[in-house]
Length: 559
Image (cartoon, rainbow, N blue to C red; front, side, top):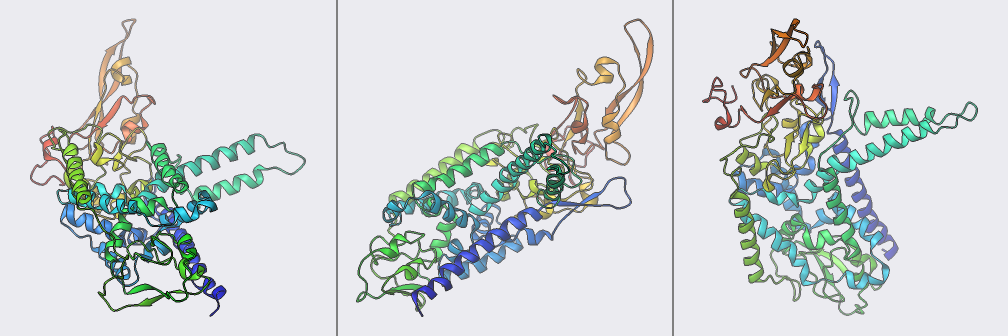
């Protein structure tokens, strides 16, 4: 077989597979949205565009998520067992997931090709001891996981890309499409019968329905802290200007975990020393910088299975062959880890754990009023042991109320979902967040149970509420309350106006035994700067100690 044909059947096929996996990833992300189902009620009920298990594909094949959940929560999500397939493939063929299937790796490879100059290719694609950083990072994150710290998935590439795409990239694209179509519509010169808006408006409506998933929503996707998430992703991409696939080589903990399983893979690279001219063309084209020198010391833990080395070799001196299981690597193929480095990583991880656990909130000595978790969320400690901050629940939320946490849950809860009623509310007929959660941090509960779960409690600010502060009737909150027998009710009160005239107005009150804290009252309040009725985490079912209203059954908090 000629070298040209080998290139078509290896590197060419790999690129096609990478593109297909990348398209598949973003397709699943776009499908993680609701579709309105119209029934007998006054308003449509949300449903997912695709089966929930299908939408979680990339998370169930991620062994890092499974391992971390096992260590932190001492539980194994059933779907996560599919990640064992990834481990078996890695043991057989090495880190082919990184080189062929990982969407984050594909983006890094494309960015590296654009940002890395040709003159620096030899320098940038040679193995250095700095590539062990990711293994130390993995160790520094796994050790705290033994004590319940799930912070490792802040660095998981699939979680990171999902969170960035759902809460930053997609909203940014939607904003750009909306504003650009508005500008084109407003500046359309209207020359004769030709109108730009005749083409722009249908295209924008199509994108709104099938790409952005805004059909029936009535609002744009807005996420607090999305700019910070986007900035972090931009920095990760820009690092490719320093080293090709910088993230994959130096930081990625998933790549480090797969590297551990590929210490002695069945499929190994073979070098014909008689024909090798030490030209190092193979090293210049290596995605993982798996060799420290020309044709020597192939390190299987760093090889991404891109096959560029054997394709680019002008002498055909490199091949990949199946080896006897467990056979040691040849000289130069192993990676020497510093004992001091591993100890420092462990100490650093434990220090970070201590720093996060000394706050009153982490000890549940106090409760943050703004930390309103979605219905079905476990107790805060158990929730943080499972939640990856992937953002799937935020992407599926039909009202946009679920937002990535910034300071509400402390550093340990960074980017985990929190309900912000001023942005969106918890739909009474929706339980999509529990369906798409890949680790069970949000339990999938049926709607009948969800209707009895309290996630917070509404309270009036009598200094601002119109009937209290200004003697004016306003029943917006009561009208929108979704509880069948209304958690907000009104009583007639006689007030005296400035001229001494007495009038009867209706003052709203909250029934704390019925209010579930959905937040729609705060969301629709006539005050747009600071609502006159606000929801806090008080009375949440998941925390018996955070319930000032004693009527709720403490022995069965979800009843």
